[in-house]
Length: 67
Image 1: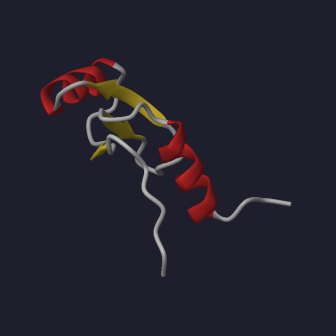
Image 2: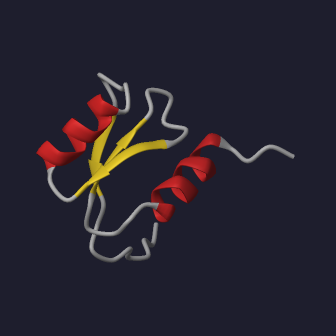
């Protein structure tokens, strides 16, 4: 059984290094670059061949959310 996209994205984000900048592929299915700073992740993603990735800053700690 396939995992829903939201669950896949959450699993991907939780696998990312904490307190870092990450670049996701255009379809948000994988991390294509990581950096300590925004500038570093942009440089790393361009070096990996991704000109327009989704850039995110991961938290220092994942906090549970109650809805």
